[in-house]
Image (cartoon, rainbow, N blue to C red):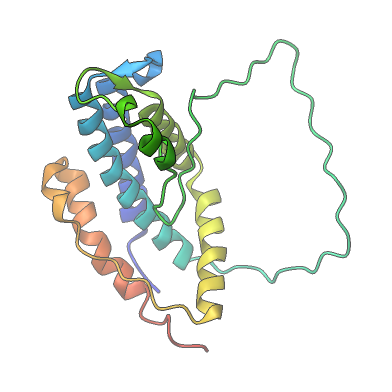
Length: 205
């Protein structure tokens, strides 16, 4: 497989800039407790675009990797945790959020709770900021260590291919025109690059 490596590097840089725009938009660095409903909707839409682009960039990276043979483990020994320096604080965002490479996310509210207590969802007014802040945090971590996540994704793709799963397909991104020109151009080019990189998916050799 061959593809311009500069596209991945440039794409990740543009995604970082776009993420910082979302951080500034929501004042995420100040960890607000609530956001205006319209602001949360706008930030969530932008984050969804960025998540798609970053997943596709990581997939391109993963398809270019050659994974080493998996070593058989004879026994597991518990790892010894490394002690943190005195005075170190572990900072986390206030809500749990898992950003999967598949793009699926955990719901913010248990649907059963909504059935029992439908009044907890307000039609207007500020909404909790925690889900947006946690998505920002998860995406930030991925952009800080793309090589690590690309390796994880490469292993996942290898397992899917070994099982005989259907070849993934990258569809055009309809909302790319809403992005900055640099990032929009990358989002438009990614489906073609991914589909070309996946041409050998059904070849078992």
